[in-house]
Image (tube, rainbow, N blue to C red):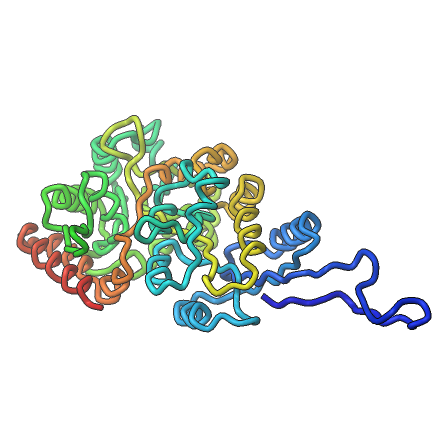
Length: 416
């Protein structure tokens, strides 16, 4: 946003009249970019900046790293105030775009994305939450989603030679692994992101919008089938029914050596190996299975989109930055550097050499996001889905509890 002129040089009136730009000098514009800590390595950012500025001699990049803690309030303030010291491009969580777009704080990028950015190939779990109404405000950058991390040695001991391709096979295989003091799977009772995938796979939703009104949908037949599958799978291990996957951290439980499978992002393997290096060669990965063998199951897709504040005064420069970061070259480079899923299904081949990332990329093609409404954060703040799951897993009537949770979701989504 800051503009600067290269040195204006006054020369003697005997040589030139007045002051002016030296030959070859030009006005340059600085594009300020806010990226989140750990989203990209410094080495990647240095390489990107060097090449971008070389290819855009009229632009300078000022990349500023932000912390996730408190970022929502900071972004909202930047969108409201604008100004020379504010950002021109911002990385935001894919599910946060609607909250920022609602107040007209973001630049509508629909035409740019339709014309130049191959939007038809974007991962739906990033592209859909980047929309508000019929406009595209968030441009997909990178994705991450859950896969099944498993113990190859425990699979061999059970005579299992290949990962399952369907949910029925997954249940059968997990039951075979749940023996001899081992847990077939460690699945905490309140892992609601994993439940969401099972619900979507059945054709259900966490909430649905009709005539501008959002209502909880956990009580639909499809959603209830998703919860029933979760109940059957969770029973094939000793995961706590009244806690989520971080209480206790499932990486530590898996590292103890008596768990055959967990559902997690592949990056969790580093935490497992830090606690149990002997598992270095025994960790495997496969996509969460679907109902049919022809494609993986639906999963929640997390990740980031790039947005441009409506009040930017470096509009064209900001668009050039977004186009470069989300384009095939630098998006593929980021995926390889950081073990992410690229933003387009057609780029998945670029990470096929990494088993965990390849499994994640396969699942990402079936990825979804939470309901696209700014009020969804109110649901997560006092999450009724977690309580619902615990109630069902401890024997309460699923229909009754689903209806109660759906009402609470409806109430939270109605809050303005």
